[in-house]
Image (cartoon, rainbow over all chains, first blue to last red; front, side, top):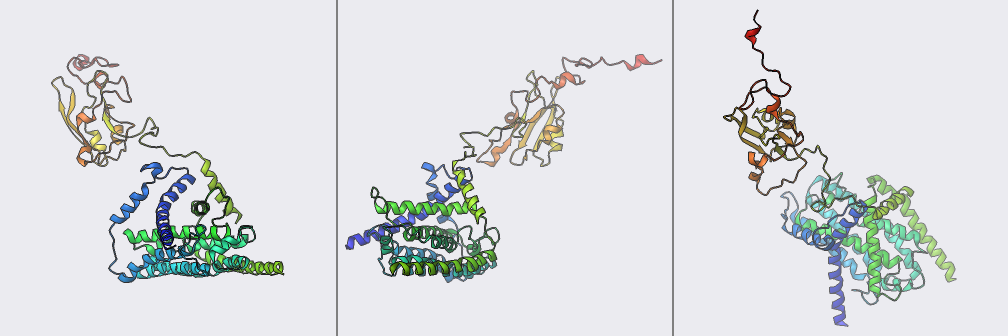
Length: 317
Length: 171
């Protein structure tokens, strides 16, 4: 049992970090595909070694801390985003029995950890002592706070249906029917909130390179910038795997493939949707984003929770 | 909302479109015939240099990348003793080609001139001269110009009347 545990931790960490690096390549190839280009296709088969080149380049970049920055916080901030996302992965069930920490409050732990990610944005933007970084950080903070609220509320629908916060048990409860069908609204709200949570396009308002240089990480270079980058890709993977776990039956699937493979396949479908969003969506204005969140999605998620609970009560009677 | 989903679908359909990229080193883009690329000095049909060292190209050049020295051969033909183009300065505007009165300097459809050493971008006359008449085949400056050179006196050029003896016209 002890040995199995270490294998799981090592395997999850290895897979995740490699996935995050590989997503750099995947995203560039997919964007290129949807823009009728080829993307990186020279280094190695299908250009996959571009990942190696990118990483080496990041390592050899000057690791500069601006003299006007708050040095301790400046160095600390990029570590937070990677650490918090990796912590959140601890509760994700990758397959039957393949989970780092089988907590009975797994869903709450995920919400807590993904909210911690906002600290890296706020601290990074604040410590940079740069107006654009601070603007990005402020936007990031308010976006995260407002989207965090109904992200949690949307997830409560699945909790009501399955009666547990344990992610493994939520997956098991979907044996009869994936929660995408009874929880379509919840899924849509969670998906939109998830995009905002990972601050990906079209909700990359804290970064908004066309208005804010590079937003909260304007002053970052070298591997510290790389940490934000990896944190973003890990965040995509996390949200995709949570969508799969909560709404698309996790590792469940026809028996000819093992559960882990089903999980990975489904996750990659959603990662591709994230990239498709980036390829096709314009960025909303900042006030539009907040308005959309508070005036549309928040009431909808409350209604969804109310309706789900009512139907659940009716059926149980 | 519908338009967002529609645009996502339309972008997704691009998965099945043909990619527009030219895979450059293997697959070259077609260059137009009038492409202004590498500068060359052409020759006349007899294989002689067309350049007469008039300096008009050097004067027209907006970045001063052309330098040459005119000299004269014993047979009376003018030619440049050296002709140097610094391609690290050249902007390929084609003004030199327009300025050239003898069609000697011409821009060719060729842009693959990259070098590792900047000094290698300075082309001398022997690098610039090509064994071709370029865009004006059959044109020979000395055969249409009234200038006397060895083997062709005044009045022997094409469409040229023999020179008039002005003294014979005196009343």
